[in-house]
Image (cartoon, one colour):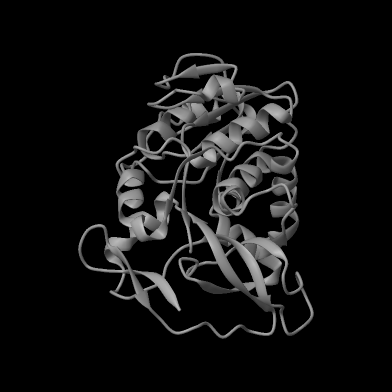
Length: 305
């Protein structure tokens, strides 16, 4: 079969022939039709050993059901995620991280849901009941941010979205949109931070008493600093939670039910995956470069012939 494998020069990925996977008993073999790109996996390409298959998000059809009888049957249209190896024509996927798709959801739409959609969903759930509460989302123009705006709005939150690029965020449901976060202003019951560094430091100065800051990315690698009294005295009871979706899935429930929840919302027209670019994986390099250069507003999807 073919797969996108890492290489040592830009754009650090190329198509190559590789061996077919051999599924474990609790894994289904999926013929991949679409994959979506994430900044994390794309950033890591340059440091991978040549010939490594990476990738997290996939959508396609089950060509061999799991031998243990779990998960979707052969022929089912599915969405799933793996810790590595999604950028291939066939992928063995644990059935606890695989879900059948409604007919109304395309493979391209479905492929955006695993990492970005699950991260947004789990981050908001960590924040708790948000009806009528103020929710702040930083890095809001990215894939996770765009899902988070829509999900928070559905839950009845008052949403503030902060991003260098603000185009389209109000249309997604953000009540307030800005390009910069300052330490001045009212507190937020829930803060979803996609940036880290000094932005996370500012978030810790804007969280409300008993609120929660959920940090799930490190776009800015600078150390985080803030006046400690701004947290423990101004916002007593507030907490900071680090969320990494793969570790989260190891310690909590499986991804299957949540993937189906997200897919059902897409099928109902309530959730827009915000796909900015769809290209064949033959042109993966251009899409990867565009994503890393911040030329993608939302998600980039590669189709697999």
